[in-house]
Image (tube, rainbow, N blue to C red; front, side, top):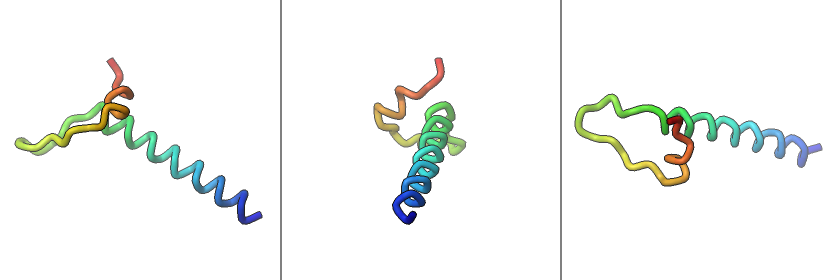
Length: 48
């Protein structure tokens, strides 16, 4: 039972992380002087 709950929790966390990465890849920094570099794997998620 505990192992199933851990798998479900990890699945939810991974979906949230993927959604956040997609949102970050398609947006720009709101601050004028700083845009952090994204890893290549996140850049591959961009919509063209």
